[in-house]
Length: 506
Image (tube, rainbow, N blue to C red):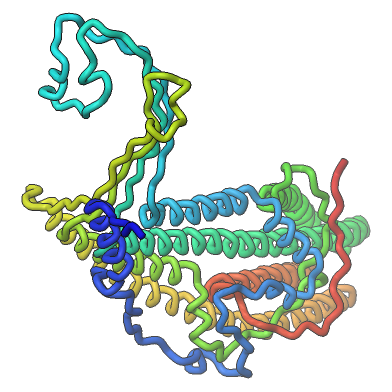
């Protein structure tokens, strides 16, 4: 039996392939180590109360806002997550980032191109056969053709190039691209969390304005009733004209506040509509007092600090740090030789009838090595830049964590303080309401003048307005805490949901 032999280029190429496939130990740079960061284990030193249930998953609790027991708010948030244009753009950026990972890793695989061509070649009469070799052209039929001859050339070829990633330059680049894609995904999560926060704050503001309008309308009714009483008493000499004028001023002042509150509500509703992907003026939100539609959630004290590992800004900073670490290894790989396998093969013939015959076959294959000798300091500068970039990302990562803990700590303190403030303001509003009743009784008995009644009413209305503002502020802080924790916490919802009052305007 005749023994089969292999050509030297094929043997050399096979050796290079084995070298490339067995060179994982030559990967330049170190794998990413998470930097140590000092973090508190819990928040009990900032607030006291039962421990909230949390999840260590890097995914926000999808139904956290159910803690407000308001179906209207839930519908707005779900609609915003589905229809908001910033969310849709963020999703497209995530897909773009994932595609870049595939692009970065494409160099790990052989690159194969196929081409075909037809040429009609006429050789100059004023030349010599083979003269084109002196100009550096590749050998071919036209090079050795007889001067003055003409012929057809049918060519079909496949070009192969495969760079063996011996030192891990391509793999480190793919690792960096993957980390960049993770950072883009965290940007998308940050947009979603911000959107939920904005929707909640806008909704609470609308309901606060509803309550302020209700208070102003009640105040206007009280003062008009007072004006009628004083006018009647003045007609029989039991009140002065000055009391009448003072009451008229208060009636006009209160009536002038209502249009501005209505304007603010309309502007805030337009903002909410845009957040939910709707055109301004397309939704009708039935006016309802804030206290009638929103349940004040309990403060989630004792939250585990691991919840901060879900914050998009922290995860984005860490992904950027991972990318910078990978690019250090990528920069180191440029100092080493590049090993490649290149080849070309196909069918070439001067006659179409013989194009696809075995005699028309030609090919070339072989390994190549490129060793950097002098590049003007490019590789050194590239490595220095990569290491400096990593240090910048490290400092940014640690600073982001510190700011995150400060934000959560500030919000916990604010929520706790507003909880106590709400209790005192509710007592104040109750006492102010009772004082109005007593002042009116004493006025009818002639024990006090009407200024005392007006002062009691003013105090009661101011107390009710402050209470509504503080309630909205606490709810806003709760939504801010949801955002600061990167997605909230688990809560148990046992209360019935408020029926929806959202309707679309035709």
